[in-house]
Image (cartoon, helix red, strand yellow):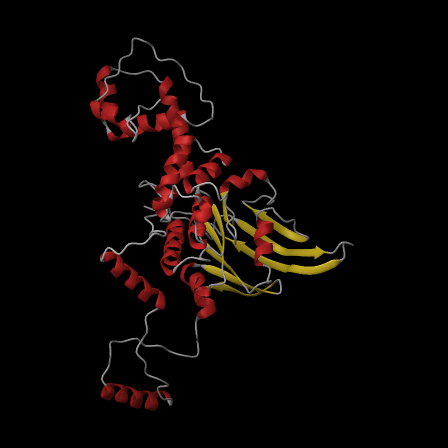
Length: 399
């Protein structure tokens, strides 16, 4: 069950007012006005499209959001703070237009490296790495050096890297560049899954069909200025024509309809055509048929479901809420144990098993939690199934 968020009432994730960026020459004279007084906001739990041709100011705007460039004038905030504020960096995931990876590391080592930069505990890094590689279809190439990858496979790894820290705000610059149609469809499905889980996404792309399929709102830039903005329906609705879709009609039926339209509206039917499916849909149908025939490929796989840690749980809790719950749950260690019967009943329950697992996970979090020793007279009877839960997938006992 996804958590419902009222994006209209919540504070915007990003606010830009009169935003200007001017690049100067060696003598500090104005040379290029890359962004020229733009106003926009990105609301929580939406996919926001940033569109425009090359040189329109998209990348400059993204770099200012990341704190990589300083604005010349105007106001810009991310999570209510200046983009240069280090405290917000851990809440952001970023996929640049070109994915730069260490070519001698494999995908597992790459994701582990970026996970360490965010201070993610080793056990959590390992689990997230496996889930992300399966999600982007690289589990079969997890031991290969990144330097051997095609552009599309590197792009898939870059997307996994942008998600390793489970960000609240995801910035994607040309995420489908270099991907085949299957990878493109998977990225679009992933964006919709992430939006349903409560994440906010900024999508910048030249492929307008991709933006049209997933974006809630969008702005179109040209020459550093916003030329149009709104929802997809607001920008794309053709108010001068009416389209009616029905199963295939007989010629005599079409003639009668044409006669009726001429009589009632004074216009004739402009054209009668059979609808066409998208080339993307046809391509995927052909590939799925080949897979059903067990045809082999040495490249990236289709990819699996969205990584579990990126989604809310069945109770609608996000990963941030789960961390807070674990910290609170850790205090149970210092609580007195009422009786042997009640202790066994608690541990045998599903909630008790979850609590034991949560406590073990909390031990790997670097935060220092004061723990009081339990009186030696207290006794806990643990069911065998709980012991089995305390053994990880490698057959080694948890610390």
